[in-house]
Length: 384
Image (cartoon, rainbow, N blue to C red; front, side):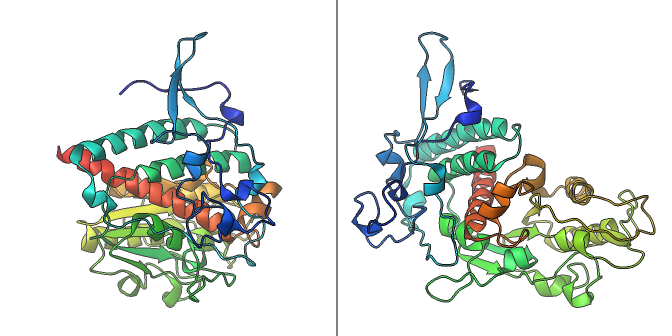
């Protein structure tokens, strides 16, 4: 595969995704010829031909040779519309619909076509890796999200025979009364499933859940293991840990990351949960999602820690334990995906400084879906 070099204008680039939102918002969106019939969303996830409208090619990107530099680079043009028009500022007063593509589309592809798609995914992932290195901001997250969408556009793996279970807290369960037109809660799980079309997607999350037992056994992932997992699921996604960090109790314990026996504190509770996953589900594909950055801070006394551990300390511990057990990691915190420590990101992606609004759910769902698509596509390549 040819080496791709991200152009020097990386800080200001965006993918050429024009959308129905590029038009005046007062227009009837369904009248836009680039939207599918009945499309009502204003961030245009529903617009199948949005990329084509921007002049992108079949793979939605172009690699051009510069006459001046003779270097190959990913050409990423500025969209004509302001970024604020590609995603809506207000989520609770709009209904978002995602176009459901033909679920048999992947099955109709030849092996050569699948291989070509996977190669395109790797190209976009290479560019996305460079985006991870720039300063965290709303603009960075937007650019990463556009790369995620191109990875998903080139999905070559058929998930229609896979069952997945999502485990976590209120971020996964769904908070703040976001519902679709059928009365179902909208979460990032909604969007992940919308892109990958699982045989069944289970949401076993519960608000207030954490690894430790500060909130009681019913809210502890470790203590309540049998009730939150699912024996029929092929894929397990765990997105938790923020409540462990934010909970304030006397003489709280962080735990010892290197003690493989103790179940005390956060580290011990995470290890206990992972021990159970390894024991009962070692043949499944398991993913741990680290928390995105938030401005919330916990101030409480620790009996085994000198000072106050940060959210970074918590996520570093979870990440290191997942590596030790051989589990997969979707590292939001480490890559800066949807980092919301700045005011602009908070207002655009979060409802209350912690829980995602619909914009946040879209970004999380598409990123997790992109990671799953890449992972399973690479597994297919390894079989060959």
